[in-house]
Image (tube, rainbow, N blue to C red; front, top):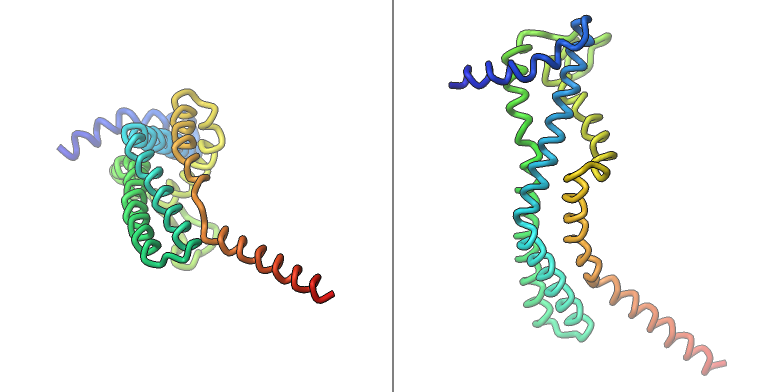
Length: 211
């Protein structure tokens, strides 16, 4: 079964490596195209996962802002017991939101194992010599190293243009809209700033009275 789907992938991926006559250039072009495909599919899967859970993400985000703001107000009023209660609720919600975000991000990596498995099947015995010895790497590298090196610019390039592409720009808009509510989150730094301003104002009044 494992070999069957590798042969199937071979029929899909191999044409990318036959676009140029030079075998070395053809390899790097084909690997670059595979890296772009991985990025596109990964971004698509993340978008689908986020879209499917958008209402739950929105609820968790609203709950996080709600409990956080209540805890900040409790600090402002000097109510320590209420602060600990509200802060615990905020931390619980944040934990759920954090692990949900991790799960969404994991979807981005789904295509990579399939591509690397196929590259092992096709290029597993090939080593690419380096012009100098790299500590921890050696004098040559395998298909994994070349894929990673080409994957990074592919990721950067797609990040630059995805907000202009159909469907991906909709995913991007939904993600941005869901995070807008975070701007309403209060911070303990705001209270500290208010106290500093109040302290400066009192100090100024005292100095004026002494004068």
